[in-house]
Image 1 (cartoon, one colour):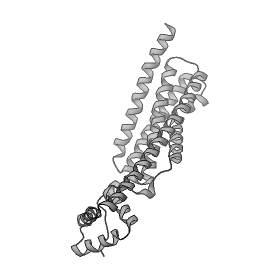
Image 2: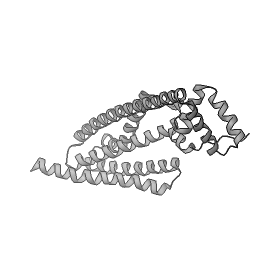
Image 3: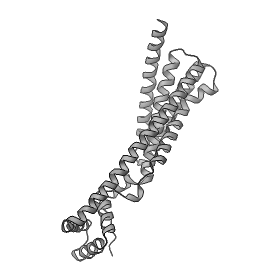
Image 4: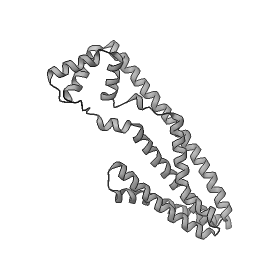
Length: 241
C-alpha cells in the first residue's frame, strides 16, 4: 500500500521537541551572550574596578536567567493550553458536524495522492475511532502532535541554563584575569568567537550557509559591544562630570 506522506511534514518537524529544544538553547545562549557582553563591556568602559564589574555581571546573569526561564515557562504553558483547546475544538466538531469533518479527511488523503478506493478505505479506518480521528485532524490539518507537548518546567530550566551558558564567555575573564583592561579584551574575543560558533551551529542544524549564520550572530554581538562601549564611556563621563 502507498505510504502516507503528510503534506504538513515540514510544519510537524517544527513542532517536535528536538526542534523546539534547539531553538530554545540557541535563543537562550544568544540572549545571555549578547546582553551580558554589552553590560560587561559597558561597565568596563566606565572604568569600574574588576570586582564591581564582576558583581554587576553576576547580578545581571541571575536576573536574565530567571526572567528568561519564567518567560519560557509561561509561553510553554500558553502553548500547551492552545494545543489542548484545539483538540477540544476538533473533538467537538467531530461530534457536531461529522460529515464536514469526514469530507476534510477525504480531502487530505486526496491531496496526498491516494486513489478513490484508497481514500474511501483510509477515511473509513480513520473515522472509525473518535480519538484517532481527532489526532489525525490535529496532525494533518493543524500540524500539532500532542505527544510532543513540552513540560513547562523543563523548558524553563533549559532556557535558564542556556542563558547562563551564553553569559560565561564575557564573565569568565573577569574571574580569571585581574587587570580590567585585559579582562575586557578577553571578554570581547571570547564573546565574538562564541557568537560566530553559535551561528555556525544554528546553520548546521538548519542546513543553511554556516558562513552567513556565523556572520549574523557575530554582527549582533559586535553591535552589542559597540553600544556597550559608547554607553560605558557616556556613563563614565556622567559619573566623573
